[in-house]
Every structure is written in structure tokens, then in C-alpha cells.
Length: 293
Image 1: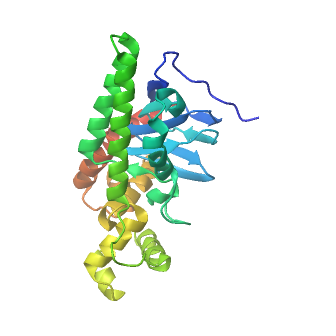
Image 2 (image 1 turned 120 degrees about the vertical axis):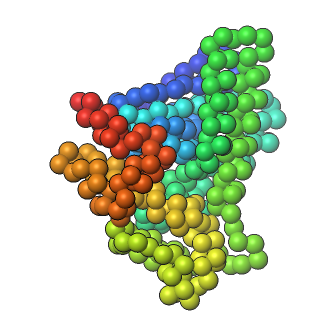
């Protein structure tokens, strides 16, 4: 039987905030509260809706009540976890924010094919400023939860509202629809995703790719981002880093070997990109992974 996890706070805010610095996987489980998670450092695999999705810093997602999910952790990861009961926050809360929650859990497209496609689990990827802003707010919520000063429960609720607005605005930007145009045909995006997967070690020029398929480069970038949640170049970088994480587990491969294996032939640039995205250098990440039994 799949276990239900209990709520982690007993104040009257209806909100519980935790921070995990962990190397231990979390087995499949459910809960009767809403939960959103922000990854701030490292990487892990989130198993949800029969899909295994690699997560990296800046990824945030919402898990509705009674949904089974799990985390496979093979390298150190830091994640902020916010649990909440909407019905305990305020009588008016569901009317104002309930629809927002529904939008945060519904994929924009069906049948994405690539592990870089954020629609696989409807991941919202925050910009660095937004991710840092949300992290600061969650730290304030955690401080209020611990210190329990005057009106601390109201402070927690107010910051949760602000965070959900920031995430929802990011979602609207990330999956922006093309006003006045029909939705992009899935075969165009699917073919582009497969091309990227099959040519990961090559130098890909997306403008050339678009023109070869009789699409303007600007329109191709717009429909690709609308369907996958990322512009083509960011999608390619994410996919390369996801593959690099797997290659780094092989001690026989040097950092240069890993870099070349994902199509980046400047190891120094690869290391900078990896640190920028994951929060560790490739060598630090590998060393941390070796410490996990």
C-alpha cells in the first residue's frame, strides 16, 4: 500500500515549510495537501504520472492531493518544500487562487518525447532572479514558522500568495501562446525534439534548421518555446546537462570526455555552463556523487 505522508506543521496557517539537503531518495508516496517544490542546487529524478523527469535548479512544480510521486536521488540536492491546505488559509482563498492551482498542474501539450521537455510533468522553470526571489520568500516563511512572532501565520499565508503569483506569471511567460495564430502542429515540435536528441554531439544551428523546414527562425523559436517551455538553445543546453549528469557517474570518463559526449568541445565552457545550471562544477558534482553509498 502506498503510504500517505503527514503534514509537517501544527500551527493555524495551514502551511508547512521544509528545506531538504539530502542524498536519500524518497519512496513513492501520497499526501492529502497541496505541495510545491523548488530545486535550488544539484539534481534528482522526479517520478510522477508514470514519467521520470530530471530536475535541475530553478525547477518548480505543484503536486495536488492524493497524487503518487517519488524522488530518486543519486547526487546531493537541495529542495524547498511547501505544503498547504487551501481550505485552512481563508474563506476567499480558493475563489482567488483555486483556478491558478489548476493551471499549474495541467500540461500544455500531450505526449512530449524528450527528458528536456518541461511539459513532461508541467515543470515551471524560473529565471535566476525569480528563483532567488522565491527562495528568499520561503526562507522568510520558514523563519516565521520557527520564531512564531506576532501575526506569523498571516505572514506565511501572504508570502505563499506572492510565491504562487510569481510562479503563475513565470508559467504564462514560459508557455506563452501565439496570439492570433493556430497552435503549432505537434509533428513540427516532435520532429525538432528528435533531431536534437539524434544530433546532440553536433553543432546545431536552429536558424538553419528552421529554414530547411520552410519556417522562419523567429516563428520556429516561438512555437518551440510555446510547446516545450524553453527556447531551442535553452532546451538544448538542458538536455546536454541532463546527459552530462549521467556520464559523470562513470569514473572512467574525464571531464573533457563528458563535455565532448554532450556536444560541447570546450571543457572550460562546459564547466562554466554546468556550474551555472546545477550549482556545482562537474568535478564537485562528481565528487559529491561518489560520497553517496
